[in-house]
Length: 317
Image (cartoon, rainbow, N blue to C red; front, side, top):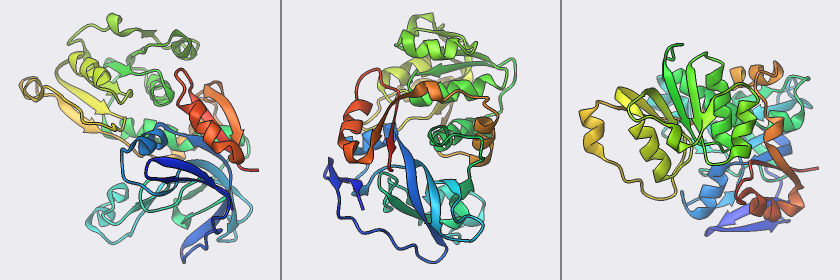
């Protein structure tokens, strides 16, 4: 089969990768569509020493697995867990000590014609969700994780830093809570997507220091972190949604003095993400800038790294 292979920070289109054999408890999924994520770009830059097929945002059809899933479109949670370690036993499987992670840690990913995942990771896609829309399930779930970690009240002033792919989804999901939300970015055309949904936006100079209860950093750069931190009132909460390829410098003393709560946030719940997509409560279609066949996967990566581009999809058939 074909697949986009990463090794030594270099991408290759390989055409002779064996179709995987699903081990017991796993299903073989024929990939229909997959999205290029910032994490994929960061892996290419060296954020984590990964070798293998990239990709973790996908929609596919089960070809081998339990009868109720065969021939069904599915999306999949990316953490394959052991079920036995202290985190699995305590109901925190995304922190499994022995986990593999689709396209990220010791498990080939979705930028290929086939992949394998545990059956328990798979979620059927409702019929009314188009395939290209369903590819947003994983990042939308990640956006929803914030609401699992932080209690949001209608009178909370919330700041989202970043108007890219993740920032767009975080902003749309937070807006549904009714909080007092402001999203800041650098690109008026991207902010316009949110303004069209009634979300207040602006540039960095519109942010008042020490005025927000919660800030969510979605840029993955030090300037975004500094702005998110500076905007918080004492005892505010700073949520980090981005991975960072390099080291992040910060003023730790001010975090202590202002008693800031710092929360890392990544994988989230798939069921409510699929429900939002099925009910069309978030807009993801307008975020799709380009679709490429798998054979043009390297060009897709180049496009995804182009300034101003939001979501790039790979179509496998």
